[in-house]
Image 1 (cartoon, rainbow, N blue to C red):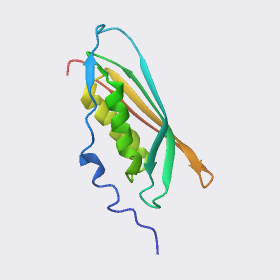
Image 2 (image 1 turned 180 degrees about the vertical axis):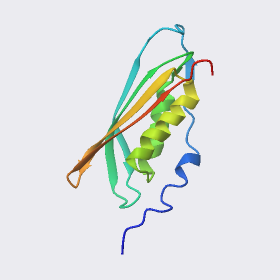
Image 3 (image 1 turned 45 degrees about the vertical axis):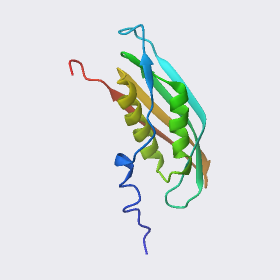
Length: 132
């Protein structure tokens, strides 16, 4: 019998997550790069129920708003008990950060610790469209 993954992650795109707040950036249009490192990220493997540990790196260029870090920390804690695949973590975090601050560009990189001899790095990127 082959393992099945069907239905394990269908809820992730619509899952209600805590809101990430933002604040007004006083240098819009500048080419400022902000790097946020989260070295103690944890979530749960949806297949095994075992914990996954990672360093998340969020790198973005703000437009008019910046991510508020206390609310980001509270948002990240939400994942601690959530069964979610690594590839979905980076895409969900990226999408919620884009919703919070509409950056000019953003990259979310998840470097997940090795488990069973396999280490995973997943990266999601987004760039705002000119004139959009």
